[in-house]
Amino acid sequence: MPRPRVVITGVSGITPLANDIGTTWKRLVAGESGIGPITLFDASEYTSRIAGEVKNFNPENYMTAKQAKRMDRFTQFAVAAAKMLVEDASLTLDEKTKEDLGVVLGVGLGGLQTIEAQHTKLMEAGPNKISAFMIPMLISNMAPGQISIFIGARGANIVTTTACASGIHAIGTAFSEILLGRANRLISGGVESTITPLGVAGFTALKALSTHYNDEPQKASRPFDAKRDGFVIGEGAGLLLLENLDAARERGAKIYAEVVGYGASGDAHHMTAPLDTGEGMATAMTRALKDARLAPEAITHINAHATSTQLNDSTETKAMKIAFGDHARNLKISATKSMTGHLLGAAGGIETVFTALALHDGVLPGTVNLEYPDPACDLNYLSSGSERCECEYAMCNSFGFGGTNASIILKKWQD
Image (cartoon, rainbow, N blue to C red; front, side):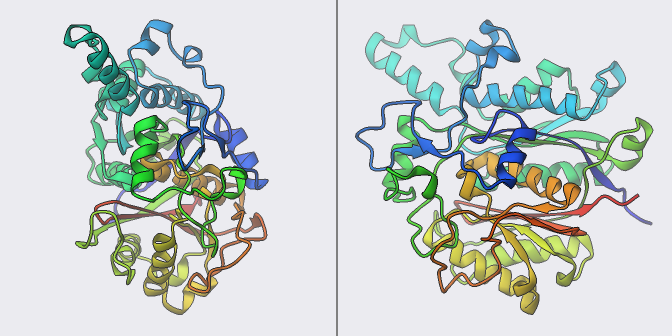
């Protein structure tokens, strides 16, 4: 018996490139960068002073000032992106729809902004001055929780927290829930906002962030380039509406792409470093191919995890060679973090959105700043800009601390 088909019927995004997905996609395809100096706090004493910040975001465009005050920035992004998603999907929120509509969202770190602000208040004014909303503001599941509250979604309400793989794990979970018949319609993707003094200091202490391009921030994120020196921290949201095909057809929904495969694995290796043979990452890709019932040769395009760190980029290259064999050299690979920075728990969400739009529009985003190719990274990374391509299948990868790996496969929509 054939399994249900799962389609993407809405997309939204808040990114360093723009506060909406249409402008974000246009700028991404044009090869523009959203990376600049940190303005959210005084970073003058930091060795890394650049980030992919969301600019000019006003939460009061999506909620009241009182509601915004009771949310961390990452949750504000979630609610705003969800409202834009519902609009993009032309989803009517009647009682029947609300009963069946759920939220499965990826969040990597949660409310660092709230933790830091409330800790300062504790130290300066004492425990009786801590906000009664501190805990519900900082916990990761408040992102899907607040979406549910704002739009009335009474279906499953779940957060996945698997570092930088959170977004794709959320999408894979939502995909699985629909395949199992537990839901017909789920909002999924990822959100994150950790460009804070503590967040940047923590990643700097790990020597994970780029420090050599503070005077040229738009050149700092350099996936697969020999002169890369770390990732650029970013923030934002990337959401998708996943629907059972029959439910989507019943309401006459437009369709961006179809979700056909999901794979996950663990390196069982190290807290922060990937298994450098590439085998762990490759396992997630091959499991996604198996789930989609596809040969490796079916995949044309990959939106790579491609963080711009020395070990990740070379390891992902090895992994693609293991998973795809000789076909790896035929893949058309995009590294969109070169323009957005690394959105951490939101990365898999927004990059799956980019993958869906690439299939829908027939345009593969390029990879900027790949000027000095690393000999260890010798595949086709679309460094000459965006490319027209009517691809049938595409994959998106996300990997995270703790050795957690996730891959999702999308198919160009064909009725």
